[in-house]
Length: 216
Ligand SMILES: C[S@@+](CC[C@H](N)C(=O)[O-])C[C@H]1O[C@@H](n2cnc3c(N)ncnc32)[C@H](O)[C@@H]1O
Image (tube, rainbow, N blue to C red; front, side, top):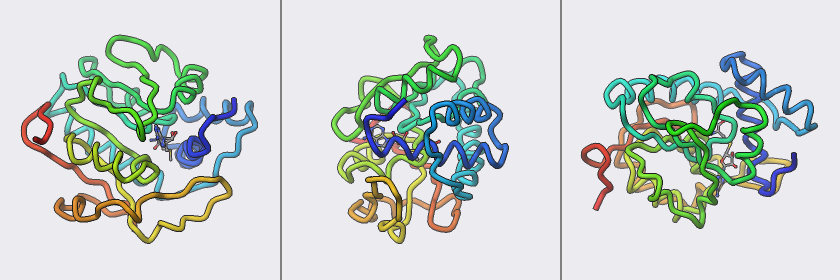
């Protein structure tokens, strides 16, 4: 399968990195998929494994506190966090470009249940408000969004966010994507304590009041 958006190829780098580290059991399935479809993996990124481990830990804490909440995983790519952390009660919605949904359905079983499903959206032009998130999870995604779109998510939803330092703005790649982070409003981020630091990738919990409330 060919992705319509060049940036979607970055999901292969995250996936391949986890598979190489054997962190993610389900990534084995997806790696078969990569081979079959002759898609470039994008190489190995240690930080992509670190951030997954860190985010699993933080999302686990959140789920323990809010076991029945709705979690929206933006820029999900081939993320399999739901399968690792599902408590049998929460609702988990995966969001990415619609064709990424096709890729997920090709390798991940039983994705379209009431509690776990995929919603295709271009996050630069479409809101996630209709999904009624209590919490947003963003791993390896915000830096690719237009600053306005990334800020719209960070500023309005509680969640666990990975953000990227401005020193990665010229991130080299063979694909036609780049980080948009250099124009992101870092003042918004600076207000929040970093929970973890994997060199220039930070994972943090951003809270805006009580469960389910958007910041006014
Ligand atoms: C580096 S991958 C990370 C995937 C996954 N979160 C992970 O850590 O394995 C970035 C993901 O963000 C998605 N993405 C980037 N821009 C997007 C947009 N405007 N709308 C929806 N998804 C987007 C890409 O399609 C891709 O799946």
